[in-house]
Length: 246
Ligand code: OAD
Ligand code: ZN
Picture 1 (cartoon, rainbow, N blue to C red):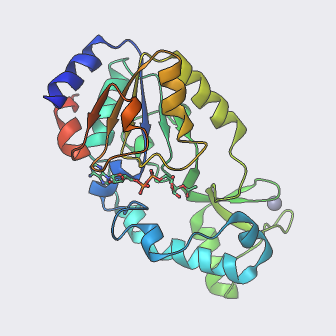
Picture 2 (cartoon, rainbow, N blue to C red; picture 1 turned 180 degrees about the vertical axis):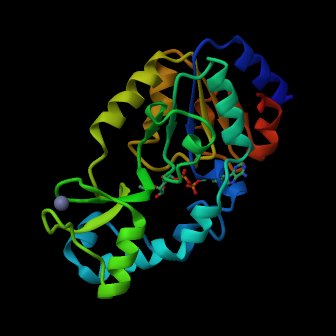
């Protein structure tokens, strides 16, 4: 079966690089983007230039974020996160590349320097001008007091969740680390991503071209199933649950 084959491939691999999308966190109560009921089926994305230009867009963006706070604050790592953390502790996984912003790989036991966050992190905020970090609590208080999204106390530019929006530059350092990981692994596992958002979706292809085996685990077909060595169209928690160890 697919899961047995996956077990063999994991056992044979020397350096496994997991690449995760929103599907690994749905069992933790966080909705994905493109499934029925997903974030983009309910809200249209607010592009970066609109966030910068429009105070109303900034307020709307923060209102959406505050509406999700209970979900993010309550979320615990799922079986997928825990399986990857077990492989990390066993020395089989040097680092994880993620499109997710929920901090759950860190929560499962990955050192933060071993989580490459291509799309940033929503558990804190940053000034889009000078990069100053702010706790969400601070943003919340300012929003409640002023009735509007705050600007940076240092440079007066808007403060945004530390995530990457459509139209925003990808983080250089993360792109370079993801490139190095993709080109040096012998097994690349794309888990819970529709693989439609670029440049992130380029990493499975890059790994495959550099000679790694490619495994895709996703409930629905993805854009890159045809180049994969193994495709498992099944629930992630059930598929990776057997690999949760110590
Ligand atoms: P998507 O919502 O596009 O894809 C998630 C995939 O996970 C879907 O194909 C689901 O079928 C699958 N899935 C969900 N739950 C699952 C489960 N329990 N078991 C197996 N499969 C499951 O999310 P991403 O590919 O992560 O970027 O989206 C990529 C980027 O698009 C995000 O990082 C975000 C978004 O716009 C930005 O905001 C910049
Ligand atoms: Zn600033």
